[in-house]
Length: 301
Image (tube, rainbow, N blue to C red; front, side):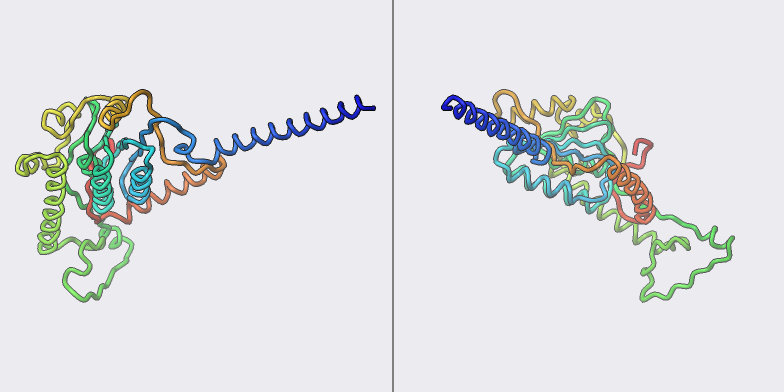
């Protein structure tokens, strides 16, 4: 009888132990799936923030810079830039946040295939810039485009009548040509925004203002050319940038690369979101014509 009782107790403990192991496994899986990678990683950490495509919004990048800056376990930050640039305001906001971050942590830029105009604007605020020899960079300049469709409207018999409070209130309107006075006004505005670009690069790269101004005619450079001109520090790939970040931050041994946490969603939801984003980008691009941009308008953009 006693033997049977012991056997029953062992069975109960085995069942409890099995349940405990199962629950631990479930918790470990849930932790891996839903907790940020920064919590799961141990040892020396380097944060990596990708900046890809046209820069139209700064919120995601600036908020991630703040998170990595406050995270004491992250010793340095790499900005992986593959962008032809974009909006003036968005580029300037990211530049400013990079400036603030360099006061407490090293920020290294790793340029991909393209890091031009606004992409370079952001890069110039970092502690070090690493580019491939064939990276397309530079394009220090400002562009403003206007869409005009007055000829189409004439053909289909549509006319616009505009009442305005001042001469320049409808400047850039798509249903008429710019006047000479409007063109002069826009050129003055572009010159002012260009001066801001030149000063930001000169300050960030510690270059003479006049030298920077001479390079700021919108031309593009290869990574190798940019290095000769002082616009880039080192030639190398992403892994070279990781090595530089490790050395500058005093990390010994291997490092863990920490990327921004991604929202996990079902494949179909992600697929539909991508389609919607593509449509919205096209519509937004058409809507934004006429906006000031630090953007390279070449084929690769």
